[in-house]
Image 1: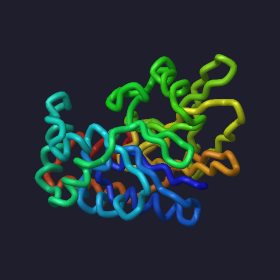
Image 2: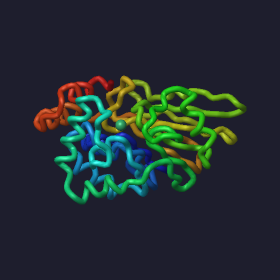
Image 3: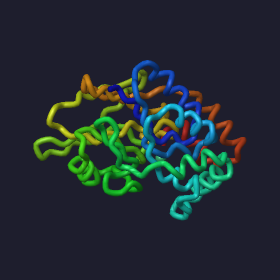
Image 4: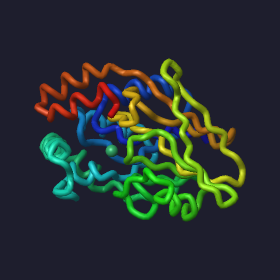
Length: 247
Ligand code: ZN
């Protein structure tokens, strides 16, 4: 089974389309780790694509805020503005789609999927200690998470937890991680629509479970086109600007 692992698309249709072109014919089943919407200018278009594309999608905090399951009161002002704008834009069937997304973690064909941490869907997993519950608690050796918008992850073997810093260098498309038998993994494909790890290219992963390889991908996309749509929609300027920096 080859999975296309998408996360944090954040209503960025141009980044999603570039991702699908780059990943073409490399995967059998697509999954999404949440935050389909929020921040970006194309909530309906992205939900329409995701609904057709994936076999499983879990909810993220921006999906909850965008569909009214959450008040967005704990969001910063620009994120809250975008969440309320998103709620206004959503067609009724897409609002219901977001409301019905399951809470992670879930298991799909031998891998576990979560938005934030194993122990809390809204917790950001940056530090190794936050990854431990997922590494040890998941029923599968390989799990995927999102939420931080940082590509990479963690491995655990022989009582040793290691940080995996594996991202494709500038000018290269992907970096491959060999999945070792007996080692447990908690991996983040990065964010399709709003990367924050300093590389503005759209991020995703392809996991070939038969050949035990996870590829961490980056693909350039037309950032200016997305920024223009965001400005036309009146979305907050800090959200527009950050796309160009990947921060
Ligand atoms: Zn997100």
